[in-house]
Amino acid sequence: MTRRVFDAHTSGGNSFGALPEWDLSDLYTAPDAPELKRDLEWVDTACAEFAQAYEGKLATLDAAGLLSAVQKDERISTVVGRIMSYAGLRYYQMTTDSERAKFMADCQDRITTYTTPMVFYGLEFNRLDEGHLSGLLSQNAGLARYKPVFDRMRAMKPYQLSDELEKFLHDQSTVGASAWNRLFDETIAGLTFTVNEEELNIEGVLNLLTEQDRSQREAAVHALAAVFQANLKTFSRIHNTLAKEKEIEDRWRRMPTSQTARHLSNHVEPEVVEALRNAVVAAYPRLSHRYYRLKAKWLGFDRMQVWDRNAPLPVEDSRIISWDEAERTVTEAYAAFDPAMADLAKPFFTKGWIDAGVKAGKAPGAFAHPTVTEVHPYVMLNYLGKPRDVMTLAHELGHGVHQVLAAGQGELLSSTPLTLAETASVFGEMLTFRKLLSEAKTKAERKTLLAGKVEDMINTVVRQIAFYDFECKLHAARAQGELTPDDINALWMSVQSQSLGDAFDFAHGYETFWAYIPHFVHSPFYVYAYAFGDGLVNALYAVYEEGDPDFRTKYFDMLKAGGSKHHKELLAPFGLDASDPKFWDKGLSMIEGMIDELEKMEE
Image (cartoon, rainbow, N blue to C red; front, side, top):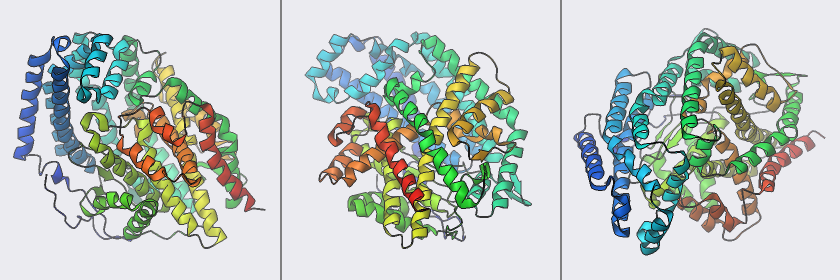
């Protein structure tokens, strides 16, 4: 479609400048746009026609006929993705707006109803004889191109239910997990926290945890704890229900573990994830425990409190970073690696593809949503001018660049498994960090940058693996019966003390902080993907620093591949193999080396 260049809408004046807002018109111009009405009607008709044409007949199709079916399914996926991307992004801009919530729910209801006739497709496809399918693939290169899609579909074959049960699960999905997800999102977005007589939303109060003033950080933790405690029954009910619903479905599907579905969707072997998890847990003493003891010394404490975990160093510059400076920093870091990467990032800033401001009712956190391959991604931030916000911009923009490059694979092959989806985002952060480090003018500035990067990596690797262990414990415990809020609190604290180490005391109320982590609700066991991505990028960056002359070409080829290749194929050109347990030690050693340098600065 034709695109127009325009001055990004802004969300008012502030100390870091005017911030961009999304222009969603590349998806649809309005909730009542005729194009949206047309597309909804088309989906209804297309799904019914697809079922009429192919149900009970897939086994009779020749290679060209099966390819036609696959391409029709892909087109339906594209139009559905466009509709739901528009509804979802509009909702996340203001989750407390009942009209937006209703619009998204109505779209989801209609899409679910319209696509129910399509449920047969994956089930019937998985019943195709392996020899027959292989024969068809050998006859038609166009069909063979979709083999990675078929492999992922057929990985679910041992776990699929009867056609009737699968249709039932599809139909009731809007009042199952997605309804509890909405309750969580709306509850979180509607929370208000009072700190020193000022009323803040969750992003505002979390931002205080990185303030120089320790009393501000302490007040923020107490405010968070008080509000979480007041809402703990709701959060406990959400987690109990979702974990039980998952346990029931996993049991019916005969999934061997509660993590199996995530591993299948990530196209990663359980033993690879276990090797990652074990390598990180074994490294806790060398990483987080050692670093936080060092940080306590810098802050002048014998023991740290939880509100000191993300405290800035005493020597750290506390100035607010303007949006223009953040954009320039990240863009220059991308360009220094390859000008093509900066060119890919440019339209995010100039065409309304970023929504950066903190606003009442807006969803917390940050993400990059790929929408569909015929449009473009959108990035959401809650920018408050901190150094970590610049790194978040570099991270999410990396996702966006990855999604733009992978779009050439088409709708079914562009989507990257979560384990690989973090590659470009973490690499973008690393490029930005290395640029800033190379420009450091003083020992104090270098120390601040190194410490900040170590903390980010601990948050990405150590903290996310601790989250993964918490989820494993939560789902195992819920399988034995209902969990009280105190039960969940205890599970949370068991992984926090293990992962953070002996430098910390844990203030009363911190045991409730599991309540606001969205990944536990939206994407069970997603969190290990962050550690996977960080370890993978650290290993990749080591190859880059070793001077491989073809690194940039190989890197762009990896991003362009999207979900068309397994992680073994993607990493092979770099001489890397994630299934080798030593692979993870290579990535963790980079963090360890940075802590070594910080310790030497104390000598």
